[in-house]
Length: 63
Image 1 (tube, one colour):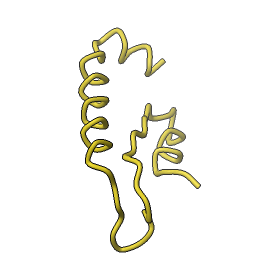
Image 2 (image 1 turned 90 degrees about the vertical axis):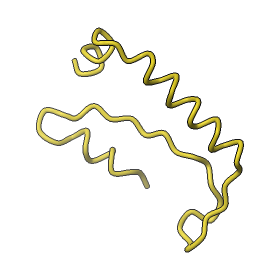
Image 3 (image 1 turned 120 degrees about the horizontal axis):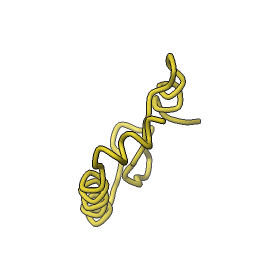
């Protein structure tokens, strides 16, 4: 099992991709359950990641 990123990174010469998911229970049901702290910490992780994405890092990921 995987995500759409698993296929997207293979398209053409490749598409750099990253998957960051919020842990949740019953993800394939109509109503998933997640913890508020997990949502907040995922946002913090994304902000930290974006702050590190300078041009040099982006070029390295693409190579």
